[in-house]
Amino acid sequence: KQEVTQIPAALSVPEGENLVLNCSFTDSAIYNLQWFRQDPGKGLTSLLLIQSSQREQTSGRLNASLDKSSGRSTLYIAASQPGDSATYLCAVKFLGPAGKSTFGDGTTLTVKP
Amino acid sequence: DTAVSQTPKYLVTQMGNDKSIKCEQNLGHDTMYWYKQDSKKFLKIMFSYNNKELIINETVPNRFSPKSPDKAHLNLHINSLELGDSAVYFCASSQDIRDIQYFGAGTRLSVL
Image (cartoon, rainbow over all chains, first blue to last red; front, top):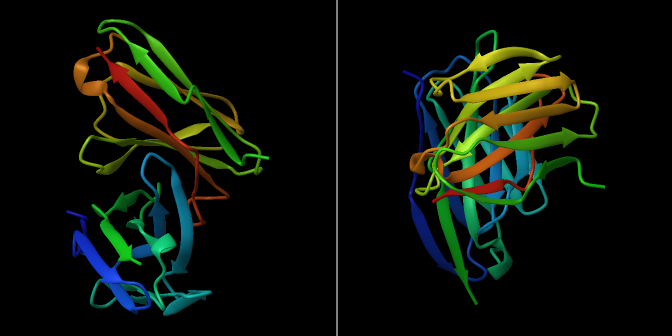
């Protein structure tokens, strides 16, 4: 069964800290992995997309890595800010004719001023 | 301009009613999706269309019927609404199945 797990479920850090969010998946046969941010009561905002052939992607203070063989991805956030407080979701698109995305349950991040 | 737009944003209705949610994307994408996010915030795919053809149909009750009149639109019709249908429904699109997905703002459905 193709599953995606995110640990921890919640994380609270003081402003300025660097932090890592984890995503693991059970099947290494994937098209890509996408990290999203969701603010309370809002839709999903795409942060980074890593294709299966890539090892990492960077955007500003965000860096996402992908290790297909071990079924893991990390989202690194540098110099965290209160505005980074949100739920972060990892979505894995597994290989198959339809390319179904499976989401993790998310990590809720709180950055304290 | 909103890339993926859903209407309505909020929908409150009685059990047993039939309702529709509309989705439109102006990105020129070939693939569109419907997701359901339940009260525990777990997000799960329901349907996916590629070039107006259904390619993913998860184990969703057949009271839910997607309709894609053209590539830019994917509407969701729900018959005989039940309490358990209360959730936030998200529409998304991508250029093809391997590309970045862009999400709409969601439709919060409350069945009373």
